[in-house]
Image 1 (spheres, one colour):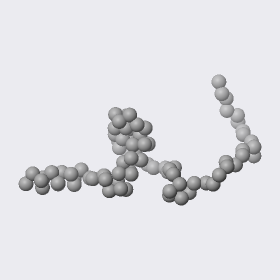
Image 2 (cartoon, one colour; image 1 turned 135 degrees about the vertical axis):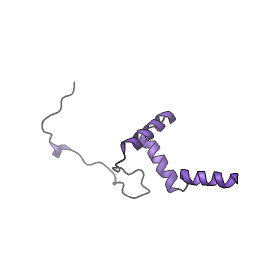
Image 3 (cartoon, rainbow, N blue to C red; image 1 turned 45 degrees about the vertical axis):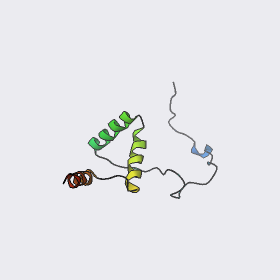
Image 4 (cartoon, helix red, strand yellow; image 1 turned 90 degrees about the vertical axis):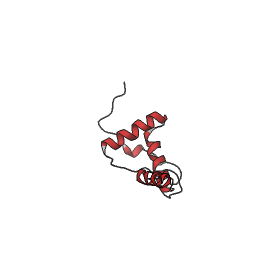
Length: 85
């Protein structure tokens, strides 16, 4: 069993080698995001059905939106009605 110490000596920490990733093309950037509980639950459920982590699913949704591939449901419904006419 691992027990935490009350205090740690942070002076012993070593600096990580390499440059800090800050540019947008450097890879993934950690962010903090607040979502409504029901939205997060739906995303987690959908991610579980897809067999992927929910963070990956959120990233995929955001990528689709940013690239213009994500179409709002209202637009799909409108296109269906127009094609049926």
